[in-house]
Image (cartoon, rainbow over all chains, first blue to last red; front, side):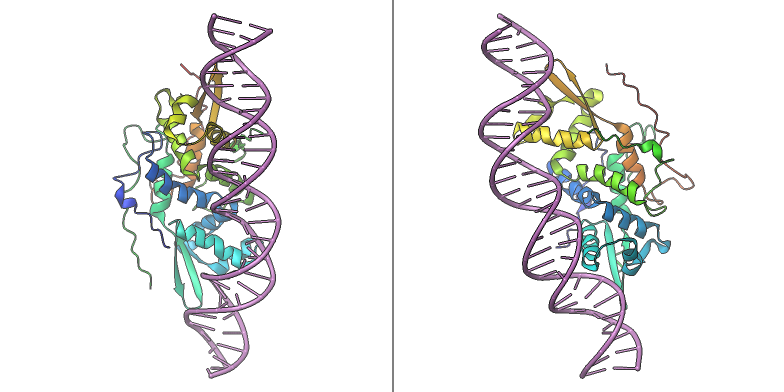
Length: 135
Length: 135
DNA sequence: CGACTGGATTGATAACAGTCAATATAGACG
DNA sequence: CGTCTATATTGACTGTTATCAATCCAGTCG
């Protein structure tokens, strides 16, 4: 189930505008963008990302939404399966945090030539392998 | 119908991770991300963006997909209504081109602190009104 | 152990999105 | 004007998604 996008297959993240995306690459990216294509999930991601420590417990997220607990859980799962979030259980609580490399990848793909520093070939960092340190 | 996102309402594009998105802002962004959440549309965008002159005729796009003509048209419409594409009729043909400011906006929103140049407050350019100068 | 709390999973339902065939529209051209 | 080409729109169908109530699972704490 956990479809960690094997982003390592790609040499780097070519901006969308450099050359037509391959079908596979587009599918991979679309999965992530689709996860972002919901106001609730975008806000969740933002809440988590902006929370101090870069992570937050579900109980910190839920109150921001007028949705049932299963629905909250569902959206978090979608973000997780898209490879945008990571979670870790700590006692009774589950903490979520964003995967910076994923956001950075998407950001880089959307960067237009004009927005990129002139001359720079690619803005995506060398994908520092954020440690899998899950308990 | 053309829901040009009144991006001018926002002072700038705060990265997702700076502070929780407002509900309105999230709705606006989600509409754009949702449009990107389909492999076909992502490829279309890429084809158009990477085409010389930054624009391309529908007849240049269609052959890349094994889809019916109405479906192609539908996807282009979705991208257009999301504010990502612009189109112009020239004779018998319709030319599409990306709206760089829109992509740039999304890119900036996703930029993580770590990816942003340290100290820089915001990566989104002051939305320079890219000139309509189509050759 | 047994109750309690935080969170995930399941199952059902209603809304939505992707696709196509058929049809319509807009401009070019004879 | 009539026809042809390129694209858009409509309508129908199907698969997917968002949501909730009910239930389950994992830790915690008496």
